Length: 203
Picture 1 (cartoon, rainbow, N blue to C red):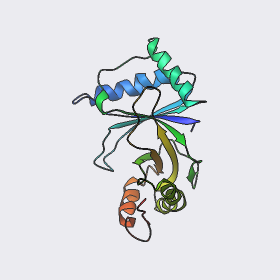
Picture 2 (cartoon, rainbow, N blue to C red; picture 1 turned 90 degrees about the vertical axis):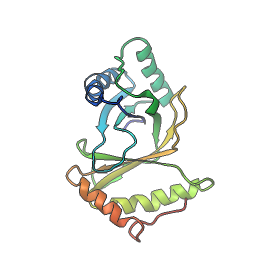
Picture 3 (cartoon, helix red, strand yellow; picture 1 turned 60 degrees about the vertical axis):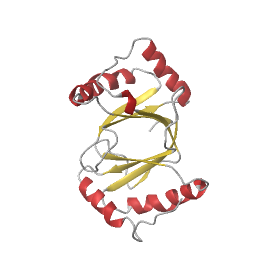
Picture 4 (cartoon, one colour; picture 1 turned 135 degrees about the vertical axis):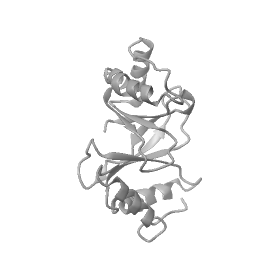
């Protein structure tokens, strides 16, 4: 991934899923890639492997350089009419955040662009942020990666883009799941939860 990632979680307007997804995949991603500070763009759509989900779509944009400067460039392109807007999305439900990596990706092999991504948004318990990060980095990631099907993970700290409200969550983890083992991975996750194979924390 780039120096930071623009994370956009969105839903379509009721009954306009096909139009919204078509606009995103065929128009908006191409528009965003025109911005010099946007290195890559990819749209993920929620599957039925893990329900319920709060958002139907997750777009990830790798940003080069300073995130604030990169976003300023994105906004400039929009103001200049270089991006085609859509009325098919639901702006009231949108989450927009800048994700800054906390550490390099961890996993058994390099990322596969065709694999699934499990997006986990979290906050630490008040006053326990240091313990939360210690547990997550030193315990939880290893526990999850030990489950067959989970092949990689990277954690990020979230912050708002310039002029946008702060996201409710402070952290996000992107877990990569082998595209052929999605059901197996979630079954293993549920089986491990609350056992010695997945040590939880009050933090």
